[in-house]
Image 1 (cartoon, helix red, strand yellow):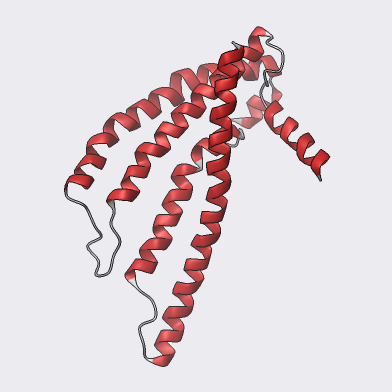
Image 2 (image 1 turned 30 degrees about the vertical axis):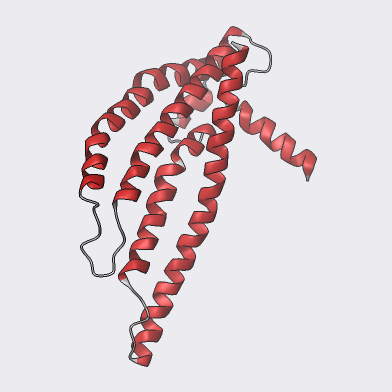
Length: 193
């Protein structure tokens, strides 16, 4: 079980890195939005075209990246929506069982389903080297590939969460229970600050 916990920590670290990187992509998305708005209005005032389809699509692509690639990070931080009114009132042991069973019966099948049905969709996009129909638009096939990457990351994180909950339920020393990863992280960040 300790070996599996080490694997879970590696998955957590990778998804945490990508999640933090998506914060920078979100900042970039806002900057592109500002450039688009300023370009549109300043361009209209000057009688010039200062915005472009590629900038508009870049903003949309950045949003898509954040939405897709941060999902595993949000799961790792226990930020996904659940019925918290009921969940919060449960004991930590019950929450661990809810996490374990919910992940096994809902999240993992959903990820497998999404991966299975996305493969042909992404492959077709690569076959035709799909691009935007808009003049000056961006290629779409790289972004569609992120669908596969995102669901693979989410599936790995689901496995990590199951490993951690199962280890905690078995009483493995150092295995984080529900909410404990965030508590440890807050304590560690407080000690560093």
